[in-house]
Each structure stands twice: as C-alpha cells, then as structure tokens.
Amino acid sequence: MAESLTRANLLTRAMGADIVIAVDLQHDAHLMQQDLMPVNLQSEDAEAEKLAWHERLRGRIGRIAARRSVAAPTAMEIMTTSIQVLENRLKRNRMAGDPPDILIQPYCPQISTLDFHRAEAAIAAGSLAVEKKMDELLPFVRTAR
Image 1: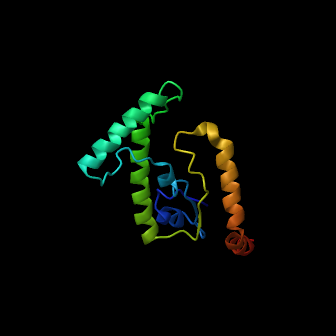
Image 2: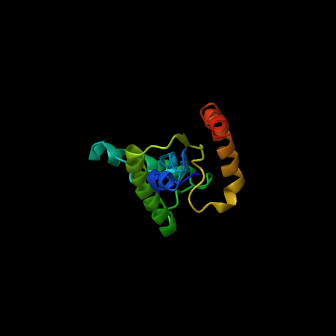
Image 3: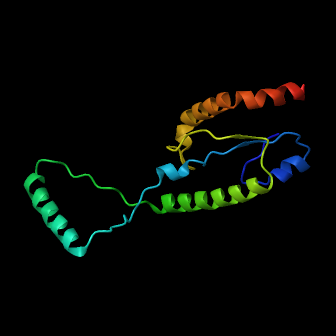
C-alpha cells in the first residue's frame, strides 16, 4: 500500500501497511523556477553606462536579430508554483516526523502539476527511478511473500 507524500504516512500505517513506499514528484521543482527580478549589485553609474551601451548595440543590430523576450508567468503558473511551495513544506515536515520506508524521486523537472500531456515522459522517469531503487525494493518484496 502506498500513499502520497502530502498525506501522513501514519494514515497508511494505520490502515495496515507494513511498508510505506512514497513517490516524490516535486523534489526537483525548484529547477524550473525562474528569477523574475535579478539582483543588481552594481552602482547606478555603471548601470547607466551599461544601459547606454546596450541601447546603442540594440539600435545597430536590432533590425537583423530577432528579439526574444521572457514571458511573464500566467496566473495559473503562479498558482501552481504557490501550491508546489506549500506541498514541499508540508512534505518536509511530515517526512521528518514519519519517514517512508522507501522514497522514490523521479527526475522530471520539466513536468509540472498540470502537464497531463507529458504522461509518457513522467512514466519513463518513474520507471528509471524505480530501477535505481531496485536494491532497496527487493528485500521488501522477498519478505512480503
């Protein structure tokens, strides 16, 4: 019997689970976050000079090179990221109090909460993560028989 990390492992144990195998899909969510407001440690004069140079450069090559801009996050992306932050904090607190017997953490930073269309990539990442944990899983499988 397995249980989500956002639920207490105590629940699965109370339901009779001898072994708790948890899957953490969001352990690497921070890898996809972007800095929207970079920290600037330069003086105002250096910044003004840099901006003037940048404007001259853009004026010269602006017609040739296509400009690429970073899109601002949508309301849905902001909400999803906020939920992920909350889930990660809850998960850490609960795992500290009652850790699972085995923790499987697939590497899939490119997949977020609402990316149902990326199911194949998620399944492949999960399969690879299970293969990496096989040495830990086999003793539990052998004792369960």
